[in-house]
Image (cartoon, rainbow, N blue to C red; front, side, top):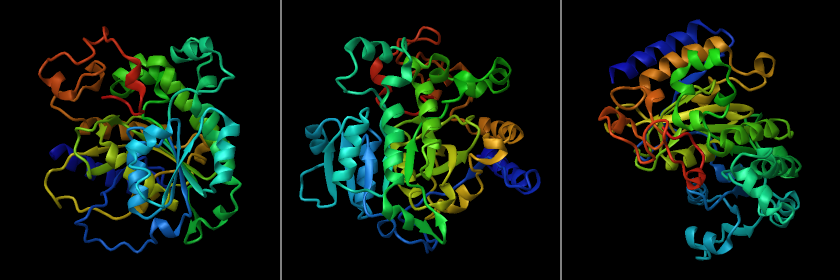
Length: 396
């Protein structure tokens, strides 16, 4: 815990003294919880949106997003590939009038447009990843795209569906009223992944941030998935919709949930986060004007001492300290801020060795500490199945 306290002191000093224009790139945020005593004066999400479309609603994170929205009495349009699967996973039809399930090929713009015109939504959360079912793509094209041999992003649903959804949402008239205190709220929240920029770093930057650049998912980048997500982020930023891009670190269902998140910018974060917490953050963002136009990473610190770090019912304070993508000539956070962030985040890695660059894909920090081989083999000899990419988020 000493490392964490030292990091907090560093963060406070860094934020106050180093960047007068608020370009700090890391922030510690308490999480909402049932035992919070902090008053929350922000309006409920159900009063800020009429209906939220969730793309990838049956995914391992998407299903949590749907459940969280419904728990807040927010109507949901679940955009899914398989209606029968959705009905089973989302307990629908079970009499919940807030949930509508719609079969959609997210790689087909016309399909998305039809679905969104049938059931009007004024906000959306993108949790999908994968490739189109469109008959316009040959089987060979899909196979080549899957294994990264073709112009990979063209067959990705992210590249087609995400900007299409953004364009449709931006034209929805009711969005004009989506604001808090005169500040615009995000209309489209994208679930991306930490690490998406790292394969394109030059050798000098990779060496400087080895603990981020040499983690397994970046080193191997199976099927070019990180590049697909990065290109999709760019398309979203340029499609004219108020957006927010959240890049979680290692998605781990065995990691404790309802934990304090650490948010940062610069794509140097490494760590773990439970999908339940990812879903809560994605939904919270819809009611957080401080998130609009920003891209940031996140993981959580597992804290088993209830109340040791008091939770907060809002992400607003934390995200207000992050910078919009539009600053610094469109480059976002400065490189000086990234260097300081990296130095802090490397102290917060799980385990004892705290050396993410030595991990094999599928190996945990705990296994690394014990010199045990991970489930996909030794480092440099991993066998990576396609199924590992059914959800996004760096594996570390």
